[in-house]
Length: 293
Image (cartoon, rainbow, N blue to C red; front, top):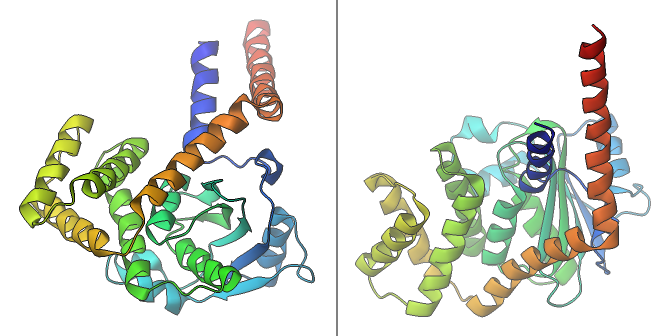
C-alpha cells in the first residue's frame, strides 16, 4: 500500500506540474513576468512573491481579457474563457538547445506539456516557464501572455496565424483529455502526428487523415468523425507554417531531457526524497493513530 501511495504521489507531481523551485533547472538569461490584467493588488503581489521578484525589479507585461478572447474565441466558448484575465507566468530565457520546460500551479485544464507543445508550434524555444494563478483556473489564457512576453524579450513578432494555431493546438489537446484520453497520451499524439507530417510531407487531407488514423490506432485513441475533421484542418494549417520541424522536435525532446536531468541530479533526488519522506511520515502518523484507537 505504501509503495502504491508513494508512486501515486510522485506520478501526480510529475504529470500535473506540481511546482518545483526554479533552481531545479539551470537556465540563465532574461526574465519577464506576465500578469492577468484583472488581478487584485493583493493577488498580483502574491504572484510576484511566488515568482521570486518584486514589482520594482521585474519587467511586467499585462494581458487583458480581450486579448485572451482574440486568440481563443474561435476555439472555446466565451464563458469558458471568462471575463477576467487571471492566469500569469514567469518566463526565463534559457541557454541554446535547453528546450522548453513548463511548471504549473493552480492550473486545472492545461498541463505543462500542452503549453510546451503549443509554444514550440508558435516558434518559441529555450526557456523555462512557470504558469500560476491565485486560485484554480483553466489556464487557457496564459499562452497569450507567454507569446506576448516572448515577443517583448526577443524583439521578434510572432505571426498572428501562428499564434492562433498554437492556441488551437493547446485547446484541441485538452479536448482529447476531456473526451477520456490520458493527458500524456494526448500530448504524445500531437507530437507523433507533427513528427510524421514533417517526415512524410502529406499533400492532401486524405494523407493527413491516414497519419492521424495510424497514430490514434497505435495509441489506442478513438476519434469521432467530427474530431478527426477538426484535427485534419488543424494539422493542415500547422503543416503550412514556416517551421523548422527538426528544431521543434529538439525543443520537445530538450524539455524531456531537462526533466530526466533534473530527476536524476543530486538536487532533484533530494527534492523527490524529501517529498517521499514527508508523505511517509504522514502515513506513519495515520497508521499510528488508527493503531492506538
